[in-house]
Image (cartoon, rainbow, N blue to C red; front, side, top):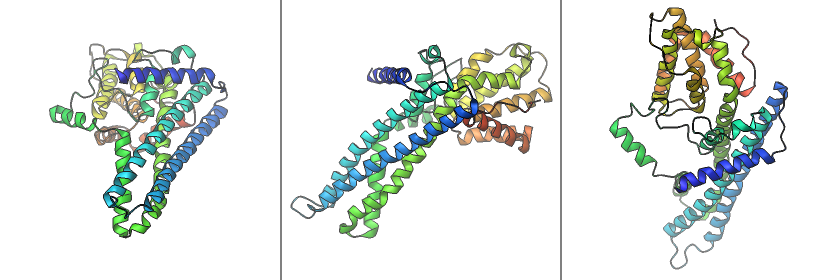
Length: 355
């Protein structure tokens, strides 16, 4: 299939970027964090530049077409159609450059973090770092197929499945182009003067530059979470359960597994950091004694940390977080969330005992 071929091509490009990158593994965590922050900021600036160039192209087309408006065969609808075509082309090239640049930046980040080459070259779905980085670049939150016996869409219902299939028919390029065109057209109609159309195009530039900045910033944060998760997920397990997973009671082990499963079915996707955790904890063991209050608190703390590691949250996930807050208290929730944030985006180690 074309989709699989494109995915293999993108993975190949990512691995080639890793091989050709001049970045080196920075052992000092503070220096590594500074370098990652710099790569992040540069990618956001480039995305803003791509948006500016794309918008300027549409402005140029609008100025050129304005000279022809009113001629035979040209009316407001012809103008709108021509601008839509120009927007489609410019947005297509804009997204290609942004996606390519984000993968190149992710490859450089992987070198800075010192992720081993053999880990980067794994292509199995459960372990493929490039696969999940490509998902992040395309704005896809995670895997929606059954994995480890967990179906993310188990609670979606038939109507929900139909709606999701319909929504997948729309592509990013088309939606972005129409969104830009509709906004510009609305502004023109409100102003009510054809002569100001090109000016409206120019005024709208900062909005779409800002959209690119916000979108790239979110994308790079998600990529960084997925890259750091390679090292952070086993560290999180060790910090939360220093006695080792093999010494956990069956009730606590089951609570962890059930909590991760609930997160996945609520978010409707499996995040790569959740995949790593599920591989590490294994299948739940037969229950013995019921879970104690202390064990439930430890499980809640770990599950809250996993929420912070697992990307965008839906309103359904926030209901679970409120339940965890009731068990842990607002102060503990704030501490755990800030610690995970620092671990991902500042490369800070876990120092406070979670007991």
